[in-house]
Length: 115
Length: 117
Image 1 (cartoon, each protein chain N blue to C red):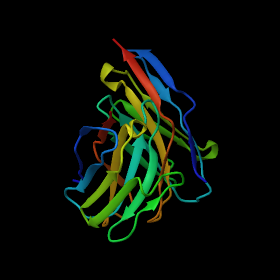
Image 2: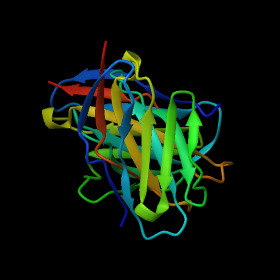
Image 3: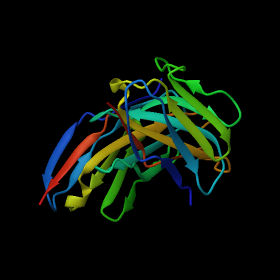
Image 4: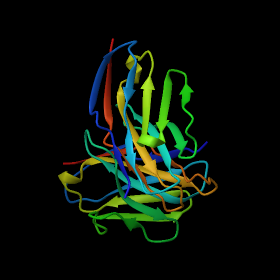
């Protein structure tokens, strides 16, 4: 069975602070995908990143960066110089790679960025 | 590319009535679509997986007769909440897989907010 744990439930920071959102996963699959999604108050899920289990390189996209550590089964997400528009719920998710694979979501982290 | 729409975006219905939610892949063909349910301040929970032309596969605990899913074409899946009750009020999100995408990634619709009074 697959499991995604986002231990942090709510995080509040002041604008321009850096913030890291933690994600730990469990799976028996040797090949899998990891995702991060953003859900603003409107409700629509916004895709942020997909990472294949074979690719352990960290990734940076603007103010966003992701740290994939297979040894600790973690896929953490850092926002540098946070902005008010970053306020949202962030979900980490895991899926297998087959045609019948399903997405397993973590419980989500509510990030509030105060001006 | 890979746009998924949902209609309606929000709906209010009276207890006991049925409501249909549509999920469409606008620029790709989707052999597989998924329906999720999200209660306030909670995560997305998979309700069912629908494959075009076949019966949907429901997750444990989801009532098949209450949540009717039809996936009649490669671009459309519908979820009908039958005899809705206030406890069915929730945010329903669909996703679709592009049949030509070997990564099997899911593309999400904007969601439908259902309120049953």
